[in-house]
Image 1 (spheres, rainbow, N blue to C red):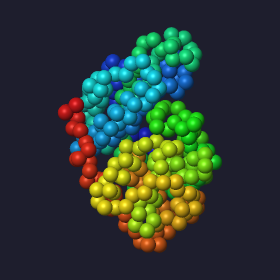
Image 2: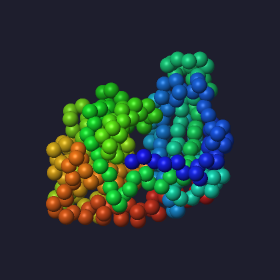
Image 3: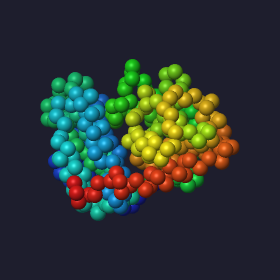
Image 4: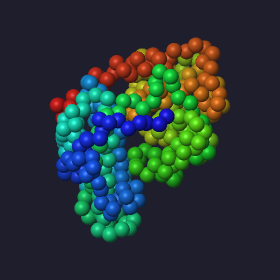
Length: 302
């Protein structure tokens, strides 16, 4: 599913480093670590009428990722929150907004891989855009299994939310050529990991099943869905899941900040049949929508 340009984003202001600049002036140095080696961490946040969703959970993960990457300096949470607040206020954004929050290792004194060349401290980028959920969550999406395997912890741990997304992009390219909406990625043992941009769940016999988060991102939306399910006495199982099991699922859906909860209608050309007439995905979408007020922080409270 291809996103389209929203004309409201043509004149937005973007936070770069220490302040706001116009979109046309929102640039980083050619010596920035994100340009030199994809050396940055990031978060995707959604803004609802109730506020910024799960903000502190996202900031926890951003700071954990930066620490795991051994960033010498990590901006204080108060600084990051103020940058987000100022960006949203200047753009008049209070709903239907997605924030791409990026922290790079910063500018190098000369080109090279060595982090010791970064001597100016990290660079914070707050890109807020008018962007409703990117998938049609009423119609659902079609997916295919990619030949590209998701990174395992022995190679590049997916628990670090880094900007080096070549692994996922190659899988997405395959799904584009296949004419479907997203790519399903397996781990190095052949079990399901996640999709190229979202975590995945399936429903079978009224149980909610999701792959263990060994070779995929520990998604904020994923964790919230598990929490909501358990609070509402819905059985949740985290375990290795094979492709064969997904083919026979009653329901399947993806989760993520960009698309929220997105039903999956087809896997590798096979329709998700839902022989049991399960309504669990619909129920969880309702619970998720009701949780906005519970997990959102009002912009003026930052």
